[in-house]
Figure 1 (cartoon, rainbow, N blue to C red):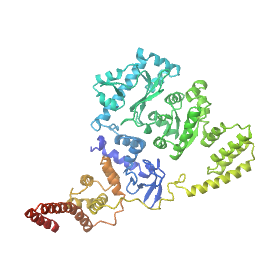
Figure 2 (figure 1 turned 90 degrees about the vertical axis):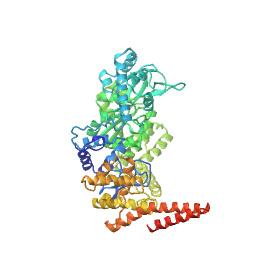
Figure 3 (figure 1 turned 30 degrees about the vertical axis):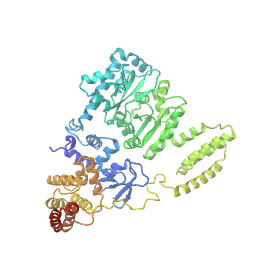
Figure 4 (figure 1 turned 180 degrees about the vertical axis):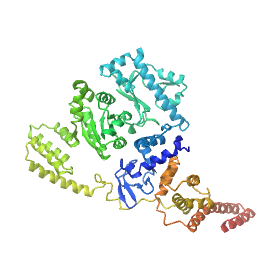
Length: 606
């Protein structure tokens, strides 16, 4: 059986690419608009107002002219979800019910030994902390603290909660006994270097430990909560090659099936809230790494569901954080609602006081729209018994209601405000319409209007092109473009040019293409990219595939390009010889200068 990268059987990679159309895959995260044979949108990998992210359905390739990222559907999934190649293939195969057989999507240790060792170290460390909590004197106080918070043995095991003792070298000794390199473990975030002398110490001491997993259930970091008073309350692992805060959501690996099934996720602030909700039967629960959500985390949720319920603490900090996260989630195309908690209460408190059924019914099922939440939030800042308070509140409320596109929604909220501030509905409606007119004028003048990827500065149909390339460089790109489209063109170039490309990456791509066609495979850019597994080459191929290669190839056209490619090294040699001849003349060595001159004539003839 032929195997791909990480010993993945080739038929699995091919099935994944067949089952995951590039447009469908990208559209989960990017709003695409058709432009001729391309689809265009704003790049999800870098911030831009003018769209340079391009998808070609015909070739099953994406490429961003802004940041240079490109590849097929597997590559896009890797980039957007922070997965390795085998992880992305497994995730996509499972989604399409493609049987994996004996291969289960685990990276081979040979592929990245350092990453593999680090993952193993995190796994055994999580087991150590869990054992210390449940079975030793060290963990007794931590166990009492967890029980006082309502954590059961079942949930402590389910979330593999542990305890790091108040000692400097528990983990240092544990890892050294198992032959893990302390320097590697420090780099991976498990240990800390001593400040004043050589050596290493435990990063977490006297803290309850919550393992943090990647979306495939591998432990990649820890969060340590202090018992009792002290700062910081939570201490997270530092960012490492395994752990990127902006690309991680707590408990996503366990919540994924429920999120997919319900097409809804509940987003909490803290790990304790997620665990309490899980025990209360809310199994589509996840949390960010702190309150500030990132675009990437929003995109991860968009790939799994259509709606997110934000369930943050009822205090002003929690509500402010919820307000901040609305636009991020909505920009990702998610419908957002808010679970309303009383002032000073968090989800964990509510569940303990009122029980799981009331939590599900009142907070989750009774979640309100973002507009309703904003109006409630604004109302708290004004005394509606006073005339000034009512006027100020109605003005702020109109700013929230006026941008709504649905006349029905506007009417519902305007009638609510009308009854609250004791102002006639028609008067409020008139003010709202005036405000809408002024907003529309501003929007027409500005750039990057809401939910429009196009804008005034972007000319329709224009695709950014690279700067004017030297003749040999352009010729090499044209050759590869034809070779990617036609095996016969590739054979002609192999016979007449071989690996004599001047640009190293292009020579490598040509060599891979020759081998690809030698296996009897058909021209297929997406499939060819899947065989490369080199980030730089994948980007280069994606860029070349996006070229508009003029017309059909012929041997004459290919010969012209091949001549241009072969001419470049001769031209470079000519330039060097001319410099050598001038140097020889200056030093008075006229015999040497004459010899070089005859070499120059021979080169010019070539």
